[in-house]
Image 1 (cartoon, rainbow, N blue to C red):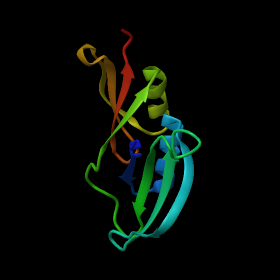
Image 2: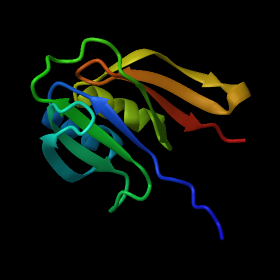
Image 3: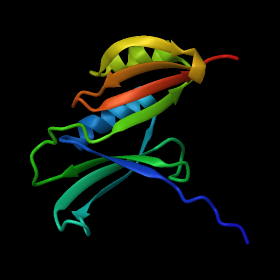
Image 4: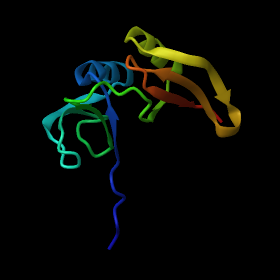
Length: 135
C-alpha cells in the first residue's frame, strides 16, 4: 500500500482579502475557488478567507488570503511567497500593472538554473519570482 504525499497550502495574513485576491488572481493567474468566514478553531477569532487555486480544484495546493476580522493589519512580513513563471517579463508587467512593486533587479542565478525577481504586493508581502533558465 502506498502513502500519497500530503497536499500543501499557504495562508497569507492580509488586511483586505478581496483586494489581495484581485491582485493574486490578476498577477499570478490564480482562481478564487472558495470564500469562507467563521471562527478560527485555533484562536477562537473571527476570520474571512479566500482560497486561491492554480487549477479547477484544490489538489495542486492553494494560496489563501486570510483576514482576522477583529485584528489590525499585519505589520511584519509573515511569509515569502514563491512563484514559478515561464515568462518573467510578462509577470513583471502584471505585477506593476496591478499595484505591486519590483524589488531590486532581475538576476540570473546560473548556478541554480534560474532567473529571479523579487516583488511586493500592494500590502508589502514579499514574493520571489523564478523562471527556469534554458539548459
